Image (cartoon, rainbow, N blue to C red; front, top):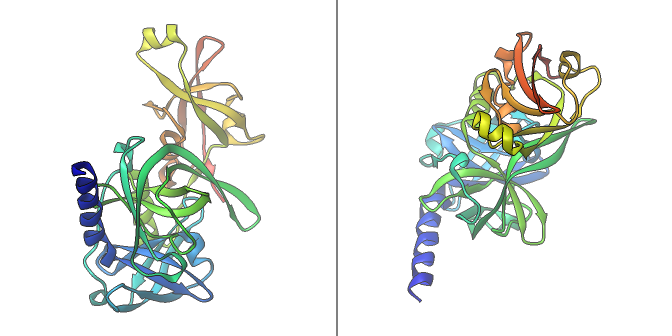
Length: 302
């Protein structure tokens, strides 16, 4: 009983801190949720906003705020909204760091599912590093490093907050993956960089390398020799891409990119922003038991 009381107190405290800072948003015929993250600024999903340029945010206390869409990024499924009057918004949430999450950790989802404002559900982090297929026009893309949770999500939760036990927002809920499964875009250093670019420029310029990979362990002898446990196994290298031109191949185990250790797709993507376009990018891979160094020159992602 004491454990249940403790759990209930934690969820109730998170709900009390977060609920008033998550709005129901209406854009044209679409709707979803959005989180207040700064003075006059809300964050939601790109798929909630669609092609809309403006809309309205409704908070649980009855407050309403008109907003314009500052920018959207389909590849991360994130969008930034700017209130016409910052005084109309409540205080922003505290942002956490999803990179510190562990499987089994308590998380609380706050949003407006099915039009029911200020709804709260709780669960745990079910898995980390998931991939979420999405589309940008005719192009199929993948949102990488997504958080999977069993906190129940329903239509309308998209764009809402996923918070940890200290009421720090660690994810932006993005999709219902199936019965009992939800997905959220992680809040981390890469996300903050994306949001800053959307606020400043209305879009995110990215570098393109042209690889698809999955985390994989380093062979035991290599692990002992170099002190590395894992890397990114390339399952596809796009024909004609900068990666292909540099000589990267499917099956390569990527260990370093830009002289930084890589353990997953996030480690690569975090280096593929505007400043990497057209510049030599050293890549170290393990191939057939040997270390191979190549230099790729990323192009701009269109």
